[in-house]
Image 1 (tube, rainbow, N blue to C red):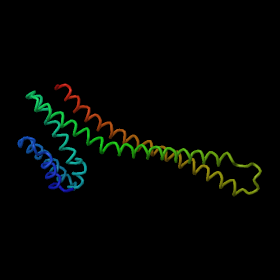
Image 2: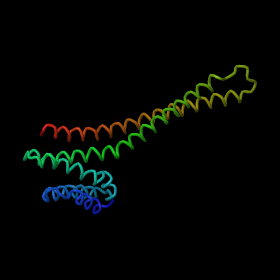
Image 3: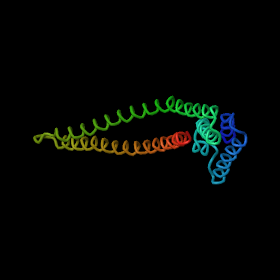
Image 4: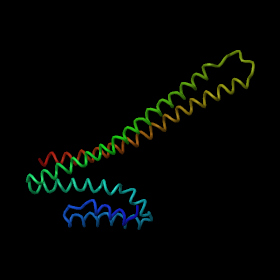
Length: 188
């Protein structure tokens, strides 16, 4: 996504927010693009690092609803705040639940495969017969068992690293939303 596509999408999705706030947000993100381009990054890389402009707009609209509620505690502002939160939560469930389900399925399948490789490696190593007449047979069994075991342990370590990154990203996401919702509950 280019700079203009990103900023135009963000501007369209912020419709209804006061014009001065929209211009501040657009100027802020335009500065991110200018700084990134000055450091040698492409517009596509910068846009990907900034995230989905539609999601950013939803979060910014929810924050704007909080600010309006904090300034004037009217029923209309409360409804705006409530609808902003509900929209943010609903979209999170629609998009986040399938992603979490896919990640859990991937993790489960990966754990089963890694476990099966480890068990196969140990079974091959234990299954060696001391009376084997052919030395090459022993060597093949040992190497095959160590190979399976190595792939199992290495795959498990890689899976552990990947899951650490995913959990860290999800915790950042949850913390962001918790902060947003916590501010809303304090404002009420």
